[in-house]
Image (cartoon, rainbow, N blue to C red; front, side):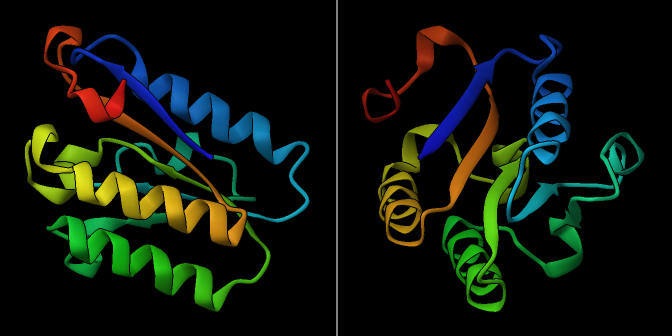
Length: 132
């Protein structure tokens, strides 16, 4: 399953995804990973989750993000959920160019039974068709 929290900057997406991650940890049977573009919210996340600062691993493109997620899954057979806060801040591409990434993530999620929840900044008027 792939989930997207979408909205304009300042609408509470980060708080919502952090709350979702912390709440999911109460019932998680597997491991939970939270990926962000910096360490700002590291202390708002439960220590039961693995926090990853994407910039420390040089993730700057959609292909790099996909490869990184595949590596995480390959190294952790108990991985249950991946939360990604501010996807566009990590991959440095506009949303309308990410259709292939979303297609790959759907297939990845289905194949490995890993949920991927992302927050994305943007206006509802500019949501690409593949994301609706």
